[in-house]
Amino acid sequence: MDSESLGGLTQQGFITSALFDRTFDEGMALVEETARYLDGRGREEARALPRKASMLYAGESMRVTTRLMQAASWLLVQRAVRDGDMESGMAADERYRLGSKEICLGAAAESTEMLPVALRDLLARSDNLYRRIARLDDVLFGTGLAANSGARDQINRLAQAFGE
Image 1 (cartoon, rainbow, N blue to C red):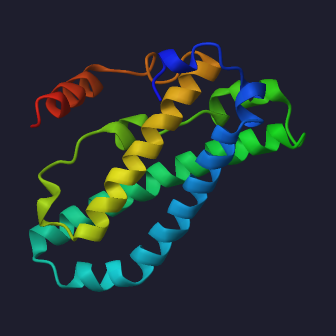
Image 2 (image 1 turned 90 degrees about the vertical axis):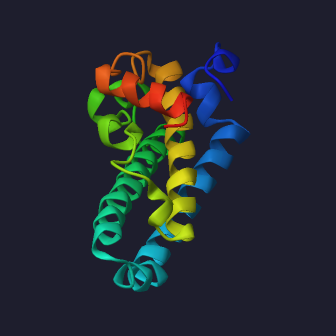
């Protein structure tokens, strides 16, 4: 799904669509899966890591948590609009928009290859979900990802494009 294929999408069209239902279900399931991992097996795996990897684990587990908190909040706002618990225009207010882009879209400080496979998988999946929601937020409310892109975000995108 890219921004161009979403061209004529409206908030009402989105929140009543199967796409919204799938995205909502995926997001909430990922939140639950991540919480179970970080509170269980992830905690055990983190203890076994060398100091440098342990510090990276702490930072990246905070990043995945932030991404999912932002995504879940955004999805819950959209559901509240769909269910009539919130006015449609309120969802466009900055406080209900997708936030923490600097943290959520930024590249890791160093290679995540030293992290446990399960955490790397959660990082990749949460990044994918967050970026899809960022595109939706941009299409539905007009100023999302594009307006908040700074020099650091551009550098991160270039680094990702060139595999660095």
